[in-house]
Length: 153
Image (cartoon, rainbow, N blue to C red; front, side):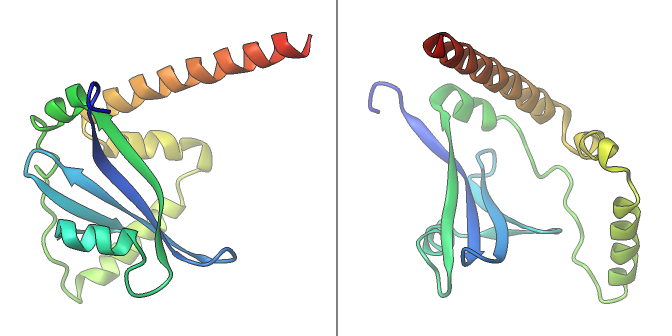
């Protein structure tokens, strides 16, 4: 690990039990050196102390479900990306109706178009990183599957 340092970038939290629960994520904003909680449509700043408290059980059934680490090169690149260029204003009670309408509109998007719909919401640089990482993962999976077939033969 000292030769190739990795940095914690995100944590997915499961709050519940094996039969039901809720998932949300903490993602490190390397540009602003802070953690963000992504819980459904709400995004909020949290302290690192709060992140690790919830990842280790918090005050209920919370537990870290999976972790995302980035290597040194990716961590340095993430320090140059301001992920909070769009800062949503605080919601007033009256805006909840329009939010519900937006949710209804999202539900009307055909499932086959959802990936494209969400892709348009992600900033271009991040979208390119995700596509690149997905391609690498797909190649890794295909290589593993090919090795498994050869072993079976």
